[in-house]
Image 1 (cartoon, rainbow, N blue to C red):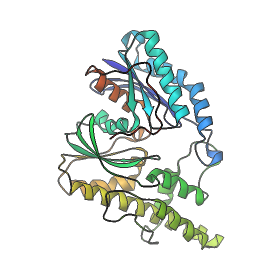
Image 2: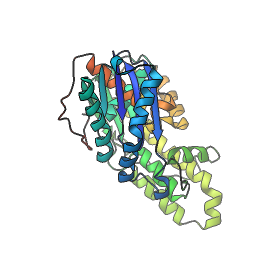
Image 3: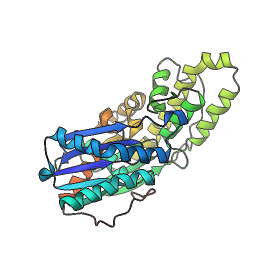
Amino acid sequence: MLVLGIETSCDETAAAVVDEQFTVYSNIIFSQQDHARYGGVVPELASRAHIRTLVPVVRQALETAGIDWGGIDGVAATRGPGLVGSLIVGLSLAKGLALAQNKPLLGVHHLEGHIFSNLVESQVEIPFLTLLVSGGHTELILVEELGSYQLLGRTRDDAAGEAFDKVAKLLDLLPSEGVIMGGRIIAELAERGNPQAIDFPRGLAGEADFSFSGLKTAVLNYVRGLDPPEREQQLADIAASFQEAVVDSLVAKTVLALGRVAVKAVCLAGGVAANQRLRQRLRVEIEGRDLPFYCPSHALCTDNAAMIGAVGAFYLNRGVGDGFDLDAVPRLALC
């Protein structure tokens, strides 16, 4: 059974072919280049870019997989959460393709896709805990069964990835063109800095929920108190200390959640899962508790269609599908 997955929730245009065993036959991702000059993703530009690029990306996914429409058994697309215009582009194409080819349609929750990203590459024993950290979400999710989830903690304000991007912007680190990668820029700069140089706050200590707005404001106030030469001299230390504060919070709350539930593994997922400091710190903490720890390859940390296709294949294999009246839902809750 082969499923075509389509992902257009933000500024990545992606298509993939995946089977019910979560084997990936193709995983094509086009990262938009139109937003850096504005310092963040512009929803209207993202939607227009998806319209231009999605059909060629789908064609490339089918060609790379070496199949035609006769080999596709279903079409899965992200229905939310995300930018509504971007979601509509992907979901509309999925509906059109499924209708024209007489294939089942499956609407996929974007966060469930990130949960499945580890299952694409690893055999993870259930139940497991997932720390999902991205530009739009920071959540601790108990996976009781595939398709059955319990929210243990979430951000009350900014997502961790959003905080990385905003701090990169206030430090004038973002490029004027190309792909916005504030998290990567901060992480690379942090390698040259002292993570203990500045004592930035860790929000909501002792709680499973997250908060990064106070940390972001603390960085802003600290930078405002520096003259230009001091700022330049301390840039690496600021980046390292900020990153360490984020990682401390993510690790501490994951450990807190582990004390409240019984699981057989811990997974890290989402765009911020590509951060090496977070991967290293979390692995030490989890494996030190005699639990297996999983995190996806970098290609599956970012928004991608392989994870969407995997969720679609899971539900299609169980006879679940959606009608063509399915709507995009920008604030779709998982649990």
